[in-house]
Image 1 (cartoon, rainbow, N blue to C red):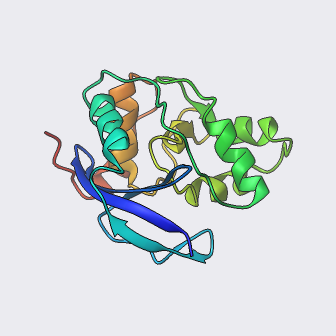
Image 2 (cartoon, one colour):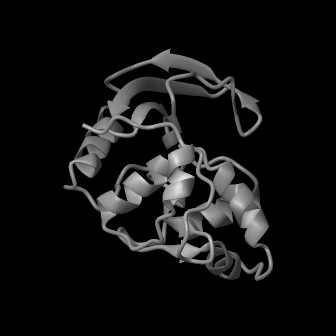
Length: 178
């Protein structure tokens, strides 16, 4: 059973759960709840502010607008296709966006934009593996695990261009941004 050290942090987009293992960041999830499994494996959780300090520090810098690139090691667990998609997400520069179709072409599955969307949905490391930078038709907000208001906030923080749809954002619960 994999051992993950964890901590919870408050962020401008709400509570985040950080989970690291010996080889790197394995979970960055919206909400404070511990997840029973990672890529189908049961997890043993141990709380440790010390083990997650680097991740928390880099996230603080990101939310302050001082960090444009994360440098912590990652331990991404999923199917081979998911890992290919997540690696493609890591190539999207800060402040830039692309479409689901662009990622599908990058991973060699030109018509697989829906499969890319599902891979993004199962991304275990939100924000750091930047699925928020993938837009429907390359311009519009699509789904996002943290909600569309969170996706819009992250894109605005990075100065990325996207088509805002206030009707979609109004359907999302309001976030308190400090």
